[in-house]
Image 1 (cartoon, rainbow, N blue to C red):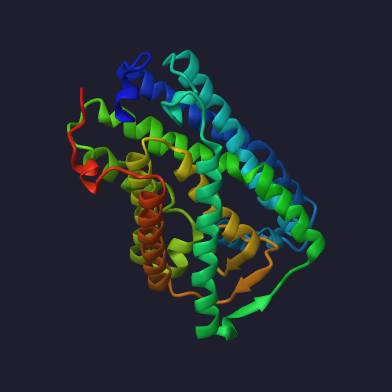
Image 2 (image 1 turned 90 degrees about the vertical axis):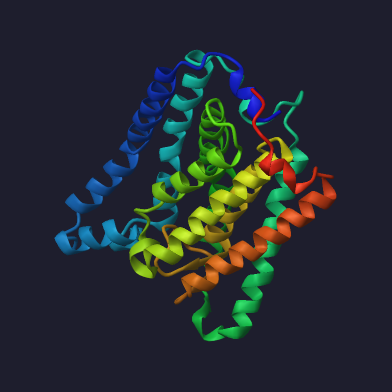
Length: 310
């Protein structure tokens, strides 16, 4: 049913190209406030030179430019407001598709599933983080400035989900369904979108700090997990919750050196093993899939190998 929704509306090839271009244009528009704040900081501080600018470009650590971390992270997430707006306008008025149809074929969005994905995934991340803490407590330190944490919490609740939801709407709905129009196997759109998901994160600071292979294993595994969840559940709600939980956890609870999200989090980790992080993500994903299959009474796993009905 999920892939059959791709037939709704208009689906000329040029519409997909125009939609992607509009999304990129919206992304560029959304960057303007961030670029202005960066330029203002660079021009008005004598202690910021080329070296500091280069280091900021590599790490996205706003403290290098003496910009409050909460302001910096807010501006980073605000970028996606413009991208989301232009993307949704293109889907609505160029493709003439239902915006709700990007998420579900049901009468209404199942918010219970969104919150299930959010809460259960946060719980799994916390359990494995606790195990890592007991293994290497020396790498953790309590960073919390509770006034800043409260502001960060508001950003994570109000603004951050715009970014994660846009990525789910684009990769796991728009692109995956679009490829499904010409593919016969569900594995083709699933694998292609997972690889694309990894590629768009290839400029993140984690790649250069911890290595392309383990970090791409992490990102592509994340794309596969979110795609499998979407296909098995015939909807995007669970994936939206899981993706939001992943970024909220990394921004609010435990930030680590080299992360693209350098925030005033509660805890900070000075060193991570990227291979261990990737393995933990995969194990957590398997547990989540098994729980979801049981709770939501999914069909057999063979659903993933079924042909796409034209």
